[in-house]
Length: 269
Image (cartoon, rainbow, N blue to C red; front, top):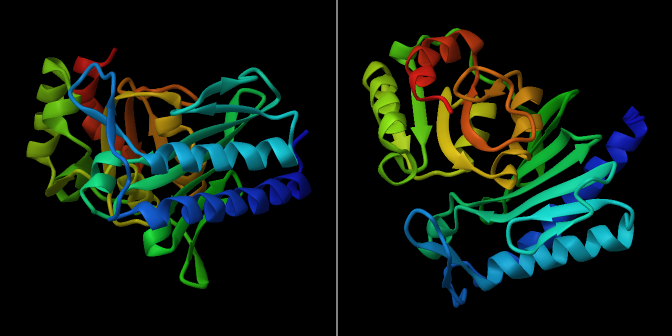
């Protein structure tokens, strides 16, 4: 059973992992990051020394502290993915932003307990920010201070700020048509922020994020943060996404999400 004391212990370790990964990544940001490509189904998919080095350091610390835990990582694969506790890692979500010198990349670290995401963080070490959450709540630790995170409620789609990473590059034909319909109805749309946009939903700055083609490491860390801040994470049918990737909608308000789902369900897979 995951009681409050155990959850607090794991959250402390989660913050340690954020500090350790940041120590590996930051010296390479806006420097010689050793970029190369890896096989991708949609365009160029870069990976850097920072991606691999940070994941290796996170995995080393997990193995030292909790050798019975499993790990799933974007760069270094799976180790005991069916364990009771499984860490799900994306050392740099937004590698394209990273290599372009833009500080909207993040480190995603999630913890799965008995198959479900229970603890997660979205870290941006260059800005000295860690958004952390679980069922008991979410908070932002930034520059020596912390505050509770709450999503924005009561915003209709006509007044909403929405986001996606790359509509033209990440959505297929039906998905792109659904995005365009939602975008046409919204007040403002932003692109290119990757998982940093998820953090902005938790902070009450962005109202809705739509993505597709995601893997488990792209989403699991965000689920406890968003839900802890009072928001929701679903697929494009409106079902809770949980540990799965694919199509994803992150919203601060369920009624806003329901408005968007009118278009999204037509492209749901």
